[in-house]
Image 1 (cartoon, rainbow, N blue to C red):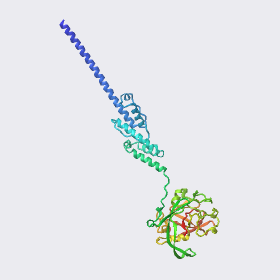
Image 2 (cartoon, helix red, strand yellow; image 1 turned 90 degrees about the horizontal axis):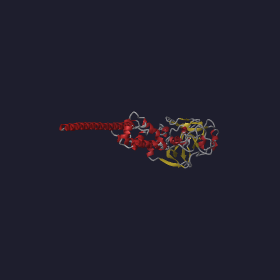
Image 3 (spheres, rainbow, N blue to C red; image 1 turned 90 degrees about the vertical axis):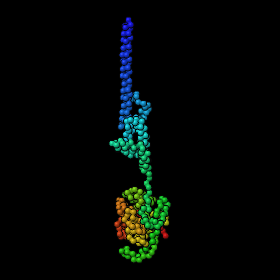
Image 4 (cartoon, one colour; image 1 turned 180 degrees about the horizontal axis):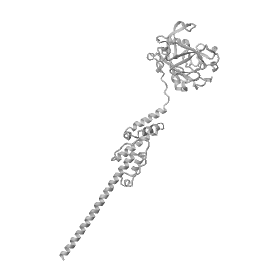
Length: 404
């Protein structure tokens, strides 16, 4: 009996041992399965993070396992999705083990890209600069740190596109020596508040000319003359005549007012003289006055041939007519300070010869007919005193001399 009881106990112990073993084995299998699920979830999360960085323009789809086991909230996932879907920037290359850094970097770049793209005038630039380097994702790793520089470029682009024309610095055309000596003064034309430079030139006036226009006798004299061309009036297109006698009209080379600012206006003879436009085709010599003002400001008169002779023969000029031309792009030495520039002209309603030549009407008619005027002229290579007769309807530059 006792032996039978012992056998029963041994059998129960064996059964209990097997049951314990079974329970142990079941527990171990469950633990291994759980551990395997956790590892799988971590792998999926890393994969999503990587794909969101590589494909910023595509929508991100989270797998079910990743959504369940991801330690981040749904709000953070949506934030990552919105960051990665912003177009127009290159994503930074981020290690797959740094999901948090990836999200922060993406958020930061998204913000800076939107700022740079807010300016309508710089959207094209931002877009092209952002997508043109698609083969180099590494470049965008520095875009977070340089986002402020991107914003500066965007703002400077706006400033450039919205800025107005900057007036030309007319002192560039003046001789450095005379400029440093303070030879140039200024006055303001009250008609349009335009400021002009002028200077006094001491030289020789011709008292008598020969039949060939050669000076036979001279005397010392001085004049105060504008050192830049007149620029006043309303611009008309170059193919038109200046026919509105109720106002001053001007041509601007290539129909561009910036050229009027830099080189001065271009005027037909009757316009310069202040006459009715019919004087371009008929003689109006009887209307020409001594010290003829024309379209010059009050207290000033039109430049004459005699005035230009004084300028060419001014004291200290060693270069003849070359000394009347600016050193600023017109092949001169500007010994006189007169500072002629290559304004070009409107010849029979066609603009031509800018920076190569310049003409100006004198207040006298020409010798080739009632429709001609007497003019002065210079090219960048001229070595002689140029004058001739040509059509009154050509548009030339104007200089004024102060009335004594």
